[in-house]
Image 1 (tube, rainbow, N blue to C red):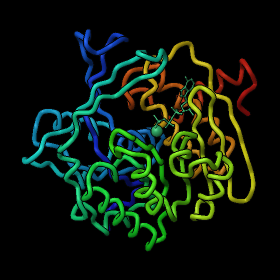
Image 2 (cartoon, rainbow, N blue to C red):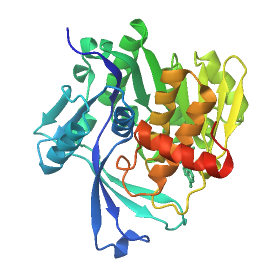
Image 3 (cartoon, helix red, strand yellow):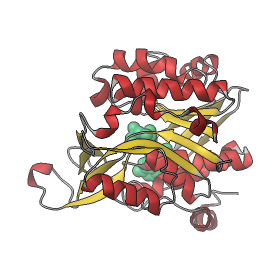
Length: 326
Ligand SMILES: Nc1ncnc2c1ncn2[C@@H]1O[C@H](COP(=O)(O)OP(=O)(O)OP(=O)(O)O)[C@@H](O)[C@H]1O
Ligand SMILES: [Mg+2]
């Protein structure tokens, strides 16, 4: 009997080339490498918080693929279902920070035709999905290619047929979907049946145009969701539950924003960790805000994701100052 996993996910891992100085990339001289990808980030975040996690992906048979494998191994992620392929390269992307909007980052992808975009139903091993309790999906992988879309759909079906929870972060990337209509029509069927949906106002507007957040959450409840978490950047987050509860939590105030990319993934990991440990929705939101804020203070998506001990240290620090955490 192979080991159980708590969470499993499917998604592209890339090399992030982050300009070490803020401003337009046309003047960039030095880029710092990081390993990142939304689903991988969440699996790493959950691993740091003590859960066993696995990732299904493909990397190229190249130096950057090797860098990704070394990183995932180092973070103790199960990579038994990662394929290394000769025919396509590892994807990369660049990050431009604080320009043209101070405090925000922009990504420029060089991922079209990458190894991970060739993932297909063949990459989805039913036995592997069944080893996990929760399948974590995002709106990014199904946007990579038709075959990636089918891979995600297959994993979702296996999960639902076998009683796994499906958790879905909408993570709509218009650069990948090309249009809001395309994102909506492709994503709605995949989100059906998810127990927890993590999202934000912009994504809800794309999925349920003109509805407003509360009604969009109701639509998600009608699609089977029990919990809808809305991430609001520097405003924090809010949560709607099917049984009518609503929670709102302010963001942690941080001394500066270095690079907000990855904050949402750290948020997801902390939210899921606290939720599955305690079912305490308010506590899960609070610690998710803390994890998101921490990652916004550094470049790179995984480096500043906290362990439980580190979450508690920062949680205590905040409590002493503003009685924010119980
Ligand atoms: N400037 C900030 N200050 C404090 N906390 C922040 C800040 N930005 C983000 N966070 C925290 O990180 C969480 C997630 O950030 P964000 O809302 O950008 O995620 P997201 O919706 O997943 O974004 P994306 O569209 O990039 O996927 C926020 O809900 C908040 O808790
Ligand atoms: Mg996100």
